[in-house]
Image (tube, rainbow, N blue to C red):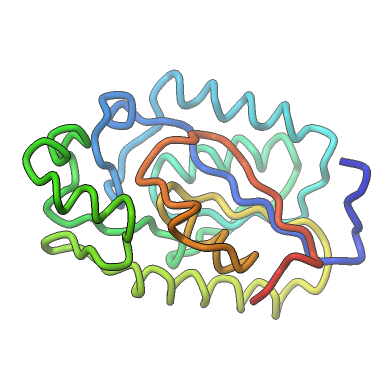
Length: 196
């Protein structure tokens, strides 16, 4: 981690720790639920993993699990946490709370398409990938305008974390797409990789 350049803007995307619904294999999307006991421990683990890195500012999704994870990180980094409404996770509409394997079993064609080409699937009563992508682009543009250099952390859950990373580094959504998982894991995008 010594290769970080404080003269460049560098962004770390951190997923919140798990919730009870995550641990049950349910689609949480934009549901507002707290960290589970394991999720809080995952947040502490990530904080320890990033102990040697200075974080200048943390932007968190408005959901409880994201805010709790951001607070843990902010306390360990002595960094201010700002709630960013546009980091709210993808709205899965009527799929919220359903088990992933239930969706896979009851709607196999839609589930397969959701995994392979998520931009083509629109959950009933939910949000399109393009809507979420537009929000991600707004967040990134604001951050790049406000912060010309330093280490910035964005705390948001999958799949919005994957959408953000694609917007940050120009990667392909299908290669990154995850509807859940990777709890309290983090990904750096360094200055020269930022594409937006």
